[in-house]
Length: 179
Image (cartoon, rainbow, N blue to C red; front, side, top):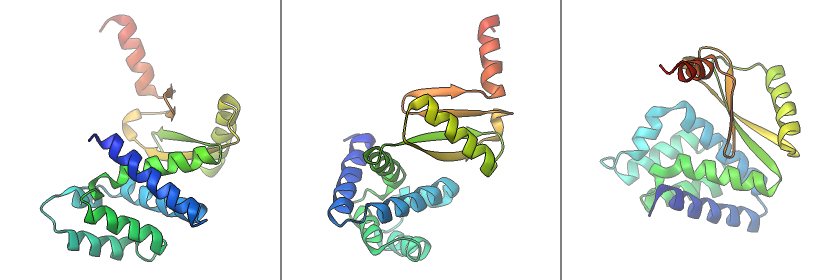
């Protein structure tokens, strides 16, 4: 089974659970925390994906790191992933859950990668412009800093990519020149 299918199945199951418990908002917040944690800690990702580390140790680390920050329902879901040997896919599962949750609430996720951190004002303006472009009721920015862009940013919404980075522009020029 592919990673995407696994992520879809678990994300849909968690969404169904959150809807039935009337805890969608709380679970969405929890998965945001999990997703941000994994995005900022490549060591945790590697740890969870390492098949040589015991399930018990993975559970203990997840409880220590996230136990105080997320609900018991979400923590139990993470324990289920560990028990079933699917915790290595946690990042993809959390992202898919957030995508489904936001779609349910007519919220679009925009993955923004910038060369430097965006200020709150820049984030607000970007979200406003993306709302106009997409026609979405609300835009949720998933921010990431990538200094290799040199300057500017890229925005990915669904299958659309907007590249205003200097690296992207240099690549276009290079392609035009046939280099």
